[in-house]
Length: 167
Image 1 (cartoon, rainbow, N blue to C red):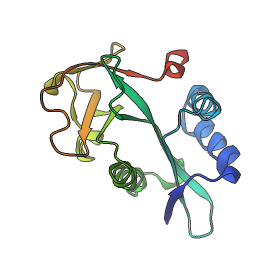
Image 2 (image 1 turned 45 degrees about the vertical axis):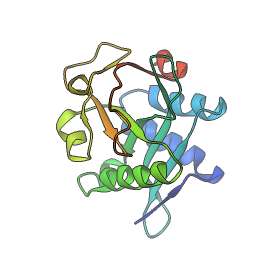
Image 3 (image 1 turned 180 degrees about the vertical axis):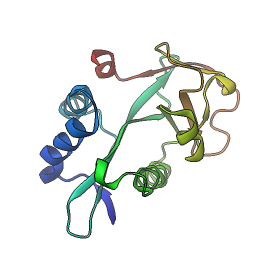
Image 4 (image 1 turned 120 degrees about the horizontal axis):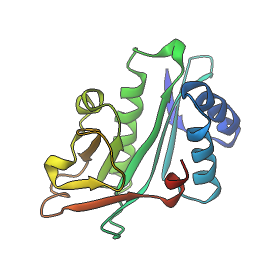
């Protein structure tokens, strides 16, 4: 398996993967809107040895109390159903964290299944003093500090790009 940044030739394949991986087209439409509006910080794909795109992770800017601190949000994360439970999502997150850190992005947030994302290095946002702009189940809003000390002394509301409100 190879993990790499998205290439223009991947766009339609990513769109199909997202439409297949989620119950509605909302995530696929979100990714297209973020891409069209220049809101993608990092878009990674996981490929088989034959080059088939089987996973996707997208990172886009978030703000804390309206302030841009170069923090990022992971959404969506998708793996083709035939390749799930093989660690591909975890590898996409790991590679994403390394790239974000290299580019100077110190924090990443996610909305998702608490146990899964805890294993990937995300902590409960509410326990760190952060809240999501939307009402979400307890523990679903998670925060990962990619550069130590970046969350210290900070708290408040984290907002995703406006495109997320259209979901």
